[in-house]
Image (cartoon, rainbow, N blue to C red; front, top):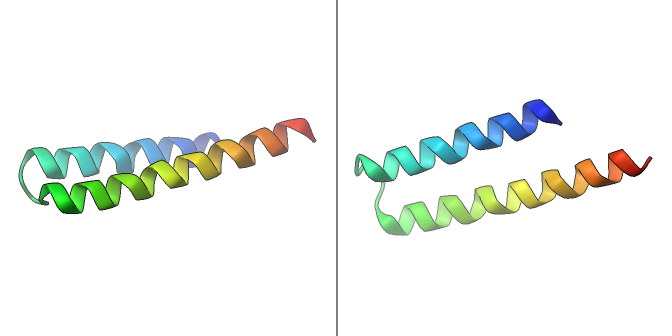
Length: 53
């Protein structure tokens, strides 16, 4: 779980960095960022389920 969470953080950083250096535009950033938000939600849910069991 920790590795997956760390990887999600890396991807999030790279998405923001790509926007900052104008490698991607704001529209692409919003799309990619919403995707990483969904991935984080899924990881958090999975983590809470595993933690309960």
